[in-house]
Amino acid sequence: MMKLTKLSLICLTVASTGLIPLTSYAAPNDITFIGEVNANTCAVDINGDAVSPVVLLPTVSEVDLSAVGSEAGVTEFSININGCDGTSFTAGILFNSGLTDGAGNLSNTGTAGNVSVALTKDAGANFDFTSGSHEDTSAFVITAPDDSGSEVYQAKYRSEAGGATAGTVIATVNYAITYY
Image (cartoon, rainbow, N blue to C red; front, side, top):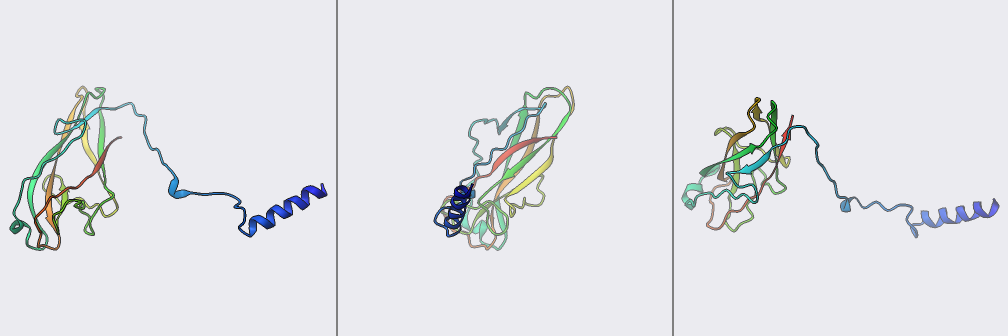
């Protein structure tokens, strides 16, 4: 018993000096898996493309984005669900982006300067991605026996500071369908 106590005291002393870590926590190396099992699930596509959707914005002039807060190139895109199980339910769309500008728009990773991409619905206020996400909680209201739905959104160029410069504009947002 005395040997065990001395050994424990020696190990505790060495560990407290930092020579041997007591535990190893590596939070930056954590992987979080999030999913959901739900009775109502549907196939999803963006403008008919279920694999790797791309929404092409029109080419606009620097002049169109020269003023502070200017917007141009409004382009509609639809998020469609189909093949649902035929019961009544409500579903939302959760948009996530890790790259946003200071005003909550989607950051441009292309070569154009002073321009970002804003998203909106029904020509309303731009979605605010300052927190990294925006949720449309009532995007789909499906009533049995319907098994599909469609929601239309708009993407557009936005220049918070004005004075946009020529180049490519590339912005990305992730989405997930949330079933209620």
